Image (cartoon, rainbow, N blue to C red):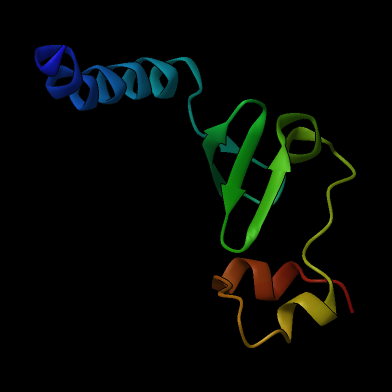
Length: 84
């Protein structure tokens, strides 16, 4: 049993690498890169959205309130395309 417990972290890492390979990064209509998190979720800066939302041609930038949140980090592109 101890051997299986000791091998578990390596097995988890291997599974994570397979999952990552099955979920390549996405690029939205603004040219921002989104990385896979889990399930159907992708992250860019302080946003985590579904794949459908990221690939939508109607995608918008972050809201003004979100951009002004001191706890969030935003790239230059997000600040540029953020909603007024």
